[in-house]
Length: 337
Image (cartoon, rainbow, N blue to C red; front, side):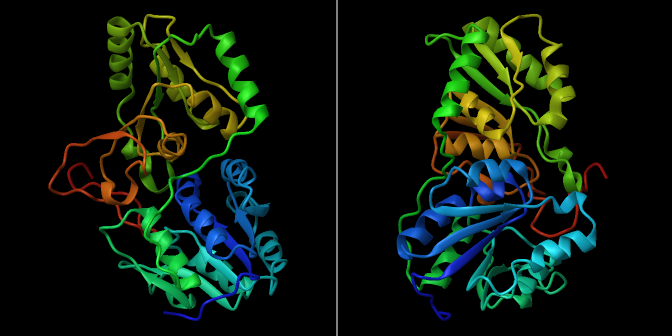
């Protein structure tokens, strides 16, 4: 076991890899604060959705947002350098198997640089820069991989792992009430949520179930159960959502537009069941304790199944699956590429 740290340490969480990954680190936030109750937890994020989530978690004292994807190298370096030598520990949230994340951790200059050593392409991505490490295990869920990092930092074995969390505040709940009222969704309605999208980075658009299949499912739910179907997605998924709604000849299907991820989560909370691709909203649904039907193709269900919520997984169980692992390599399919 590596050197452990005291309860008074300053810890910076590097949650740079995405919304779903940030959510799957939330059980580790709870355990860090439980095991090191006087530590100061801060976070560095580069997605507004992650900022929405982490700003609502009381265990985190401050969230630092910076859009690395749309900034130049000089501005990114200047931003990171502003954190130099201010923390005792930095933690790269799993999965973060990119050299950029490990270099950011090194530049921050914390004595303890926590990260997972990856089975694939760890050396090429500078995994050796981390000095508080656990070792990747393909049989573990992402949540469990993160908990292993907490064990390395605290020196404590963790037997019971909490669920994901996405706290909603009073303003979020008020937004939900007004939204549902505006769409004539009552307390007795059966409400089914869809998320037909997912990240498109690294060719992940291939994780998506076809829009026409979501539309056919909506028709069956509306005809058979008089359900209200709410189609969720981010600002870049408006066309995708509308393509599904336009295929259904009923007013019982609605494309949901909100101001931010927290408002989306608040409306999602009303759903009786949530049907989704492997996406950040799948993990949001798990954090909200919704019943989830997860459509999973190229990724490993060991890694990313909905954590500690009632769920069913729909998959073809192809003998070549999974064809995506945690490395910078884009998703490819030997059957179609």
